[in-house]
Amino acid sequence: MERMTGKQRFLAALNGEPVDRPPAASIVSVINYELMDIVDSHFPAANTEPVPMAQLAAGAHEVMGFDSVMPIFSISQEATALGCEVEWSDTTMMPTPLTHPWEDRQAEIKLPDGFPDSFLNDKYVRCALEAIRELKKHFGDEVMILGKVMGPWTLSYHMYNVQEFLYDTIMDPDRVRLSLETLKVVPITFARAQLAAGADAILWADHATGDLVRNTTYRDFLLPLHQELVPQVPAPVILHCCGPTLDRIQYFRQAGFSAFHFESQVPPDKAIAETQDKIKLAGNINNPVTLFSRGPAEVRFEAQRAIDAGVHIIAPECAVPLQTTVENLKEIVATCEDNRKN
Amino acid sequence: MSREQEIKQGLFDNTLTGNRKAVEELTNEGVALGMTPMDMLFGALIPSLQEVGRRFEVGDYFVPEMLVAAKAMQGAMTILRPLLVASGAKPIATVLMFTVKGDVHDIGKNLCNIMLEGAGFTVIDLGVNCSTDKMMAAIKQHNPPIVGMSAFLTTTMPVFKVNIEALTKEGLRDKIRVMVGGAPVTQEYANRMGADGYALDANSTVRLAKQFAAEMGYDVGDGQVKKELSDAVQAVEEMMNKAEVHET
Image 1 (cartoon, rainbow over the protein chains, first blue to last red):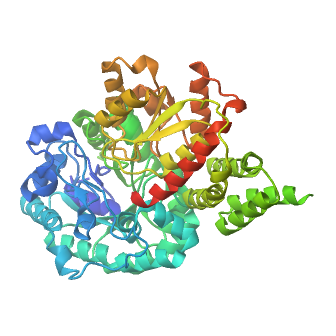
Image 2 (image 1 turned 180 degrees about the horizontal axis):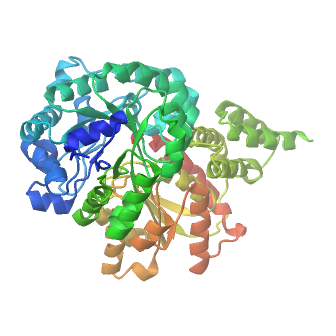
Image 3 (image 1 turned 135 degrees about the vertical axis):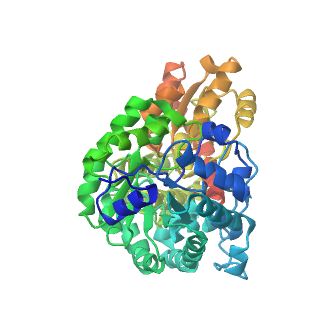
């Protein structure tokens, strides 16, 4: 089969079309300290300035060979633009929201005045959009450029605080629904802006994970919103949800996403069976043990297992630990390359 | 069944379902009937919270159910706390708990704190985003034999190793048992980080802490826990008060 570009390969896999080999992808984040040194782009600038951000993201393809690049490494762009305090200056850690504007139960659940203009003009949102433009200018259609948004459930964790939010799923579900309804415009706004800047697809993170809530919580609160929102994004949308999710793939497959990016807690063969071919899968190489602590042989074993199970796009399960080695990450790509079809 | 038995059953059942109002009413009635705080705590409330933990372990309960149960128990403790009389017995041991630097997830840690306090440990909670320096300062101040670290993100889990290496560098490693936990953490990962133990959830955290304490020569018998109940009440209250502060 003729050699495909990274973008062609990724899109073909999303569409269920033939590929020359399984795509190896940067989905959430594959950046690490070693890569930062190689491309000479470090935190905090790689999170706060578009050129260093694009430079580091590009390393996923140019240094490690992944078929996609993802410039939005953290989960904090929307949070900061909506009023959460975020620590952006740390040189060793991903930026993290530290405060929650709606955590006071007397606080009015509403978006900041001036939304969406104020949101789109936020420094960190603009940085992400500009980095996508830089990557598009640099790669054109050779490499898949992914954008990233937080869905209304994860944004509620940021705005409302996760503990009170989860408590209210039982004690005050109307307030939970108000939060979700209020925030639902945010990922649509940000996704469309990223697509206009040059993103080819959107990763949509919404952490209604089995670590925290039962699958019917997803079904009852979030599934109808996903069904409403995903069609409003004029590009493929990939859902990311951490943790044990096997029991909710039956609902994810009804939500309209092109693919589900899943973690190693779900065996790939069981995940494939659960999709009933209604949603594609991306993942699920274990981060903390395999990619972080073990060597290339173990990475290869897991990548091959995912390929053999029929996972459509091979990738680390979530944002990799920053101490992960480039050698281990390149082994994912090498394994995919060794599965090239003649 | 006597009314006292009905009250204890009601406290157990309503804590399990997070019915704080009913728990408070039953607690007040029990006090009025002359039931002791110890009887209500040991005979109903703590067993109920342990049952909540068990249901979580087997996947019948999720975090929201644990949170509403903890708040219901807090309602009872607000009433019982003034009535508890310290017996003068020593705590089992002190456990230092925190979420590592760069990570602000703490629901699991807070639930562990409740269970540890209920089991008779003194818990020093350093909160979230805790630096290695802050951990070291607290260790020097409180001299805990057990340290519990939590991380919810694959990007922050490596901090376990940083902290454990800091203990070694300070010459404290042999004096402290380190337990780690958090959703993505596994026993294998804990081993690789150099931790002494891994706890899957709040119930197993208590079992592990008791195991460590026993191995280190602390008495973990039931006779020692009574004094800690008043501390436990306070800790639950503090935990629930802090519940508003944290995030994903």
